Length: 191
Figure (cartoon, rainbow, N blue to C red):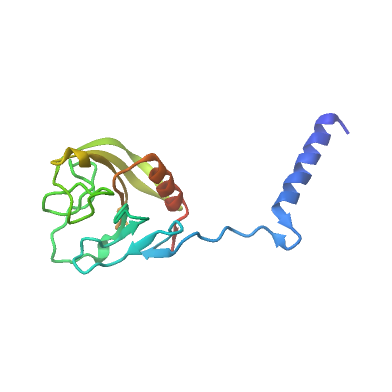
């Protein structure tokens, strides 16, 4: 047997050993935090995160929060919204395309949750394309948002599944939470 074939045989043996244990094949990792269901989508939240499916005033519907932050992201099934309420479907073709309301959009950040945020004065699309939500490809975009209170200027990321009518928004985007959201959405399942 040549040296190259020996190295390959050792690599295959080590790979096989890493995939099994005395108890059998490796099991998938268990979710850190609670699992939420939004429409047909299931997502496992990070440990310590909470989800407000419905709030009394409706402002916190679909909010995911960690620590002292009230609403870092929203997971919404737009099929369940009030059929009589006017709505703008998400779109990269309009300035505030991430905002589904018909009133003035607000600048939701860690320091300014829904209902207490300043009015958004501008929204510039800085990135768009497709990104995964589990096995599906969502319409993806990132906007730079300017606010009446400039301390609340931020970025909003959006994932939109138009057939399922599932909208995911990340407010006050920053690298640490971006990575968490990408991992969280990659693990989503449907059914």
